[in-house]
Length: 76
Image (cartoon, rainbow, N blue to C red; front, side, top):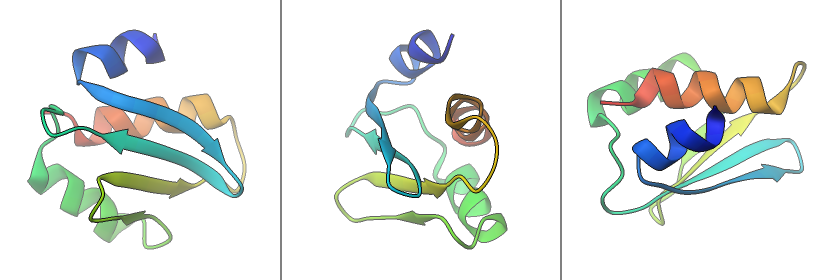
């Protein structure tokens, strides 16, 4: 399900990082800028780099579930 959602949103990649996940957004990613800003304000430990990488810290829980919830939170 996560792969299909990422494909529909034109996400380049989702990788496990040392302390969470890294979601690479391409130029054509179907992400709402307003929802992305809202997500970042609600998750202060997360950040978005100028290169288009959204890093989300996963303290507890399943990284796949966190990635899915993150994509659903920011999609158009």
